[in-house]
Length: 216
Image 1 (tube, rainbow, N blue to C red):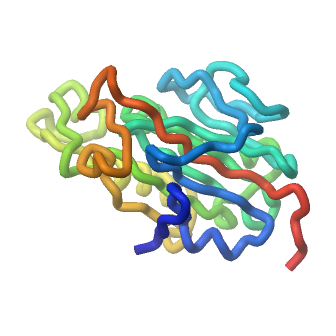
Image 2: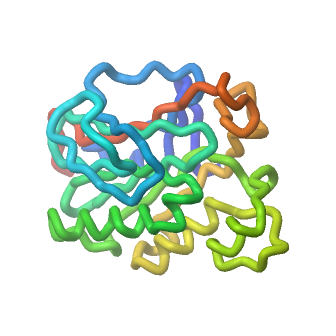
């Protein structure tokens, strides 16, 4: 498995190679850092640069290159996606439900990183965290057709869909890591809106450039 559980959050092992980076996909017991920047998530393709902690504005993806600034997205079945530009040392945190995925929030975040810092997709590492899996993500015909599937298709593999978008955008397949953990199935670890409805909480996934990055 590419992910490891430590202190109530999952890490993508491949991202540990970057000593200037901090990241984690929170479980239901994870206590987030006080300085994290978040958004009022609205299932959009809006991308925001984080220049301070706190809830900034509406949107579904955050960018940062500021040492010491942690950014995060909240999920409870939607996918948290953490993006790392290994060369330019900037990061992105993406909230991708089915509406955001269909709207292209993940590849559009790559485009925003390129516009702001000149990031190239070939230098980006992407970690797709826990979310509802194809085992449990049942949809109606009106949703299936938005994924390019026939109306009779009843289950959608959201992580695979986002992975294909990232590959098409130029991220090398070997630099995309998937947790393979279903939030609906694992009530012991994760909140799930589909399972618990109004009683569902939210997990927070975070990423940031450390305050004192070390040069390799």
